[in-house]
Image 1: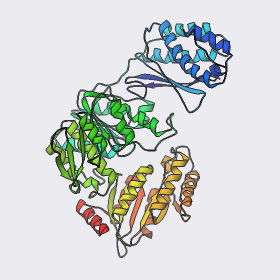
Image 2: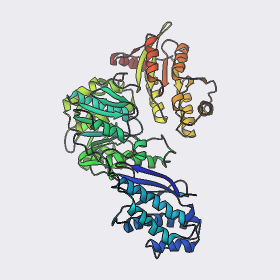
Image 3: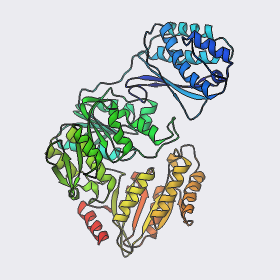
Image 4: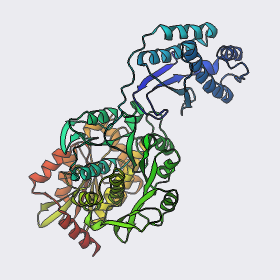
Amino acid sequence: MTSLIELRVLEGPNLYFPRAAIKLTLDITGLASAPTKTAERLARRIGLAGARPGEPDTGFRQRFALRAVARLVRAIAHESGTTRLAVRVRPTSNPHLIVVSYPWRHRDRAQEMARAVADVLDAVPAEDVEDAVGRAAERVVASPEGDRPHTITPEIPVVAVTGTNGKTTTSRMIAHIARTAGLVVGWSNTDGIYLDGELVEAGDYSGPSGAGRVLGLPDVQFAVTETARGGILLKGIGLTRNDVSVVTNVSADHLGHHGIDTLDQLAEVKAVVPRITRSRGWSVLNGDDPRVYAMRNVIRSRPWVFSRDPNSPAIRETLDAGGRATTVIDGWVSVLRPRADADPLIELTDVPMTLAGLSRFNVENTLAAASAALAAGLARRTVVDGLRAFRPDAEHNPGRMNIFTVPVDGGDVTVVIDLAHNEAGLEALLEVMAGVRRIGSRLLLGLGAVGDRTDDLIGRLGEIGAMGSDVVAIGHKQKYLRGRTIEGLEGLLRDGAERVGVTDVAAYPTEVACLAALVEHAQPGDVVGLMCHAQRQQVYDWIAGHGGTGDTPQQLGEKVRAARA
């Protein structure tokens, strides 16, 4: 059995180092179960003469293995000509697997050293450890150096946005504000690469390639990059630094993938983005999210927090430390500075993205975007104008809380389209649906899930959807099964709904079919919501084909006032 499970080249700042690194996943079963004398010989050979390996297959041997592998990497590096090398070793949820990481300057040689380390571990059961270390170092010396890292150092202002929810909306808002200033703006997100509002290339560019593509666009003066968890873990960040970072929140999503099993681990991944913000820049952090606010302890930049509560301890602490804050005071988006009066920018009701102040998440996204734009040096007047002009429609923010009016016999229904890909996103969708529902009308929800979520999370979506709506149906996402079957996903969603007493759940093969069935079932005044991920454009086309139109801010305000009445 080989010790090498995965060798991954991280092209830029990552979970382990603020620069390009090798990530090596190793199976240490051979070392963990080797006779004690064999482990002692390895320890002496790599310079751990006084180490006590412990008995085979014990917790003490496990801890020795972590230390020994780190020392082994340094020993091979030293004997092959590298005098100093930073090495980080982490355990995983599997006691037999560990992750080893070290920076690299020459791609081929760094990868050869990774393979050489694994070969030494393979030699442990054969008790050939002394010679194996020497042979490994010789292999590294004989290997070609290879390319140097291609991490880009930006020459224009860069705002980097990360978080579990809201990063796409926030990045779009920041880009729109910068365009309002007359700048040529490039930005990358899960939809593609954009130059000055035009889609240049479709696809998910929330990884390192997106940042590189944006900075390579012609005449670009200002860059906004959406940085997702997967890109950080699988490739690293494509830029050496950013000028302003934004962390919207951290909540349960994508757990159980790539060694990230807990919210604390996920927060550590997201923290890579503010950790590489330049010292003269700003890190915009959600002061209402404890895991995000805690990132102030690992940044070298200046802190700028946002919170819906002007009396938040996070705001008080940040101002005391010389930072800044953005909050809501008497219904106004307001900026706070140390020892200065509050600066009211704009009323929430004048910001279309807040859905007349209805959407808690979009209030937070607005606070984050305003903070980032000001931190990037954009003028106050420009920020106000940009917030006032950005709308929650298919043009400005496709797929995120888009609200339509669709005619039906005897009147019309409201349709809300949103990605809502996790628990927090679904709760936000239901919050908006309830906020535009008139007394006596119903909420009808089109529920769905993508396949790379845990069983628990998918079941929770079923629970939340069934509890929060009067009618719930399933609309499958064929394109995003990701290793699961339709039957399996449907079963998990139904199980969740049944746990809260809902058993009558229809299922449809596509999102469009689900929407069509719900609208047909709806009565005038009802609100239909759809978790839309796979067929966004087809859903828009269906709505237009049935006479539906996007709500203006004025129409939305009327619906909210009618619901409150």
